[in-house]
Length: 453
Image (cartoon, rainbow, N blue to C red; front, side, top):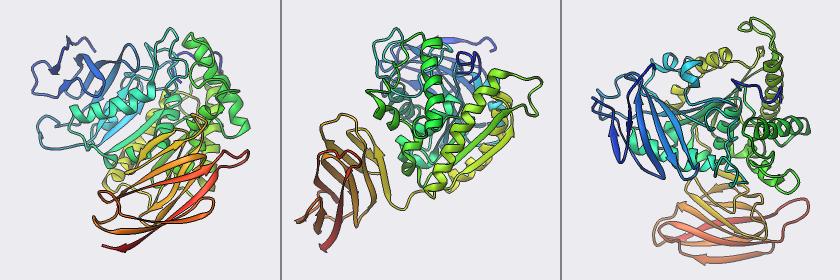
């Protein structure tokens, strides 16, 4: 969290061009930036041949923000080539330019055929939005629908305007501190979008272990009050009435979603290290908190049998010198991940959302609660498990040949069998799960057998 500490622990000149439709860089043959997917291009500033700053606006945020973009060497001279993208986030009180100015990102990424996109995650260097659609959209900061902006708008806008590998195998997401929460939360909530995620001194757990909950609540609510100037519960809501919303954005509560993803974690304890010239109590204290979050998150990954690269280098405060080193260590292996992207062998996804689509599967839950954990797990062409409450409607990918007949056995809570023909190769099953139970969700098992083709 560079810049101001979170309430006591808790270019060169260039041409700016207004835009009404599409814009090519002045004097260049591209790239062209056009409005798309809810994003309006306000202006483009070219810093050098690789480094661009695009100012954009969106109704999801209610005001303009910056998106810093590093193009790979030779981008313009290879007009038919497509490139993977690293989405790289700053921390609390940060800006889109932080990784360029303080993290050596331009030099670090120069040898690689990689587009690096560094968007604002807050307004004008304030405390930031904690990578969620705020519960309170009526504060002085406006809607603050950060997840909608970053995931629902920015990613497809980048794909529409740059020559990207526009699929999971060509995307990764990383960030420092608060941005490390964002990178792991977005990866866990949208696993079919990213092949890899990394957190540098991040906060990949905020609501699973009691020891972490105390610190994370203090930091997040202090960010809201002390740096953003809004009420403490504006982002995730009240711990009393909106606890499920906190949990539903906590990567540590969504661990199974990360199976089949390349996961990278760097952390230190806050003890002074080789890049610390003098003690900095605030930077030490914040690193201690993020170390607790990262180490417990890593423990839960191990418990679930999900591999990760975990580097606890012990000595180091919460400063950019370490994150720049982390990025240097990450980018080379990341390119190897892009060359051979991992993928889960079956589909498993848990969410508090009432409807979602992942990996070609879609599910919707008609239930009493707007937000409640529901899951579809062990999904293959042979069947899947569903947990939650109410009525779940699940649609598979196009697994089945047209004209094939299927015998579908549904165990929920009694067993019933239906014979059906999938539509366009996709099977839709409706399952009654009953009312939410006090201690656990109801579970149904669906088994699919092909009868003919």
